Image 1 (cartoon, one colour):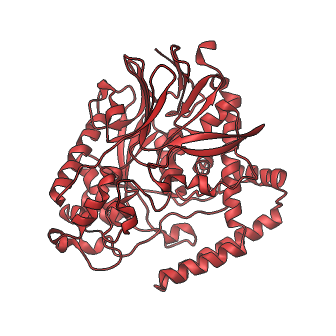
Image 2 (cartoon, one colour; image 1 turned 135 degrees about the horizontal axis):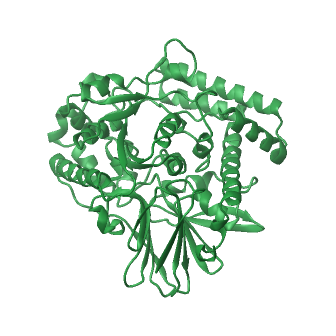
Image 3 (spheres, one colour; image 1 turned 90 degrees about the vertical axis):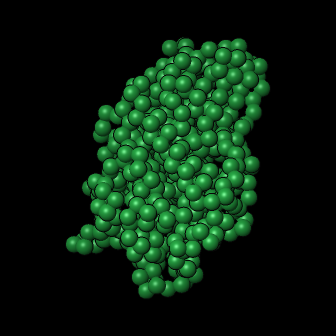
Amino acid sequence: MMRTHGSAELPRLAWLARVPLAGGGKVEVVHGHAVEIGDGWVVEGVWDDMFENGDFHRSEAFFGSGLRVDGDGTVHACASTALVDGLVYAVDHGSMIISNSMVVLMAACGGRLAVGHDYRSECSASLRGLFAQPYALTLEHGAYVSLQRLFHGNLAFDGRGGWSVHMRTKRRGFESFDSYSRSLRRTLRAIADNGADTRRRVPVAAYSTLSTGYDSVAVTCLAHEVGVNACFTTRPDGSRRGPSSAMEDGTTIARTIGLQAQILRAPSTSATTMLEEHFYAPTLWGSELIFSDMAERIASTDGVAIVYTGYHGDKVWDLHTAQSYLGDDILRGDTSGLNLSEVRLVAGFFNVALPFLFARDIGALVQIAGSNEMAPWRIGNEYDRPIPRRIAESAGVPRFAFGQRKQVAMRNDQLVFNPALRENFEQWLATHCGLGRGRLRASLMLDEVGWKLGALLDAARAPPSATRWARAIGDQLRLGRRLGHLRFVWAANDLADRLAAAAPELQAPVSRH
């Protein structure tokens, strides 16, 4: 029912499947070398069950992606529980082609992003929740065509040409911090055991990310309970100006918890490699570039890694989450984490964003945060998240060391750091957009002025509205938004072009090769 073929040209965790729409044919899968292969399934990820069973399609706590063919012929294409990764699919020559990578699917179907199309709404589609799915992404392929994207669910084919979408989770109904904490810790232990299973062909290391905010500190404390002993964090460099001088210092918290702190270098022309392009390919907001050094370090190993992150903690753990977010859905406030969805496949890591576990119980969690039992862990300001504070303080992290003031550690620079990629991007801008270097340099200068003004207002503890106003003015004075859009189109199309040339097996069923 399934035929697999490894490709050295694909990102190590990427896969692409062709499922015959008429039914009855074999499912053909081409995959990167670190994808795990089982009896009737392929997977890159971890979940809360025994690895050898391959039952990730049934898990409510699945981080990664996979494909499974059941004995009755049903094909399950499975997306992550977290809305930081998804599946993409499209109809092509009588088959549904499905992948965990937009770039890989574009290389396979020949479609490319359109320079003249406005992608802002499509890039932020995941903010609209689970029930508006699937989300379309417009491509140019002679005429306009669409990819479809799915998060937090399975795409199921019944073997007779029919298919349906199934959401991954349901509500649990937590009544207290203890009931939530027990479920969270029990699930996390099962995920860690799955990753450490010796029946895996590719060894899995484990890390967390750590800042001085609530979410990453709580996640790091929980991860340490299941054996994680190293974290990626930042530390300001007082001897230099620029991005590295403005970074948070997570090393003190790491020492308090008992973790080895791996200090991330700030993006720069000397420290950022060709992996940088993969950060720009998922959306027009490349805000996770601070993790380029982390991606490089993981990519240099022979195995893959779990990286525990705190994405979506700003909603499920915040005392003041607005009522509009508290329904039976997962509604995000931003797309943070999604920009890791392509680079993680190349570097080889699973983005285990723990706050997405039980995220459909957000109403209950916010109610718990405001309950009498949590009063000792409320601090009475607008930045108040008693659930992660209780987790961290119970692990020995001092109250003053974290969660004091909301900070932004990630910046969306409109420039491209790596010199070779920057030259490529500038040539592309001149060729496809008529945007010469003089106008580009002026835009980047205004972008820098806008960010410095925002930083000064932050340092002066100006009201958030003043900072937003200053940056909004900056947006009107520069080409920043347009450049972000063009950088997204350039990165995705350039990567797809190169992959299509290197891996022709993507463009036809594997059995023909």
